[in-house]
Amino acid sequence: MSFSDEPIVSIRNANIFQDHATVLSEITFDIGKGEFLYLVGRTGSGKSSLLKTLYGDLPLRLGDIKVVGYDIRGIKSSDVPYLRRKIGIIFQDFELFYDRSVAENLYFVMKATGWKEKSKMKSRLAEVLMRVGLGSVSSKMPHQLSGGEQQRVVIARALINEPQILFADEPTGNLDPEVSDGIMKLFLEINKSGTSVVMATHNHHLLQKFPARVIKCEGGKIKDSTKENFELTGLF
Image 1 (cartoon, rainbow, N blue to C red):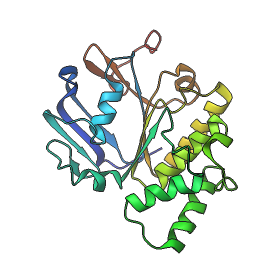
Image 2 (cartoon, rainbow, N blue to C red):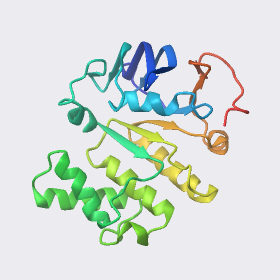
Image 3 (cartoon, rainbow, N blue to C red):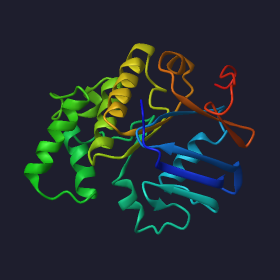
Image 4 (tube, rainbow, N blue to C red):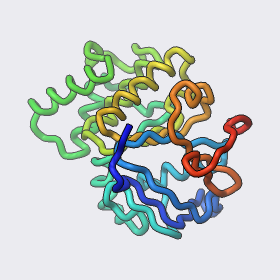
């Protein structure tokens, strides 16, 4: 699909740290508005640390990164919630509240991000659950849902504030192949509506079945499939 020349993420000569160790050095690349991007590499290669830096969970000490207009280097803790209203974050282990219903899980995010009018909250809840194919589960508890359904709830939660970009860290890692394909198709539908998607994955099958641009983390550096040819085998 086509996407805007103006990047939604701009990374320039950035060093990515995990604790005090440098995991990626002097990386530079852009992510376009409406783009779908895979982030691949061996365990410990820096994929998750890069994602955490992009959404403000790890500090950026060297280099420059801009995400949806926010300068990540030196971002104030008080500005991080505003950044996260413009992005969606999806985790492998769901991170749902298992003592609350699906609706209560989503309402929690709405309240935390400034929603106040109950009628608008109820309408948005119904809208995002329908979008992810879960229109009838709002009153259910997470443990009553399958793994694939729980991941769809997580995606619905990430879509609450109509994010400009989704960051997904191994979103299909705990799911079987058929369910993973369904989740992947949902991501592609979201992407076609104009939302950028950055997905860290070990799933070689998904890259083959749903090809897109690939950034490979390896040896403290990154390689970009749009600029060079490389084999993905042996990286997972």
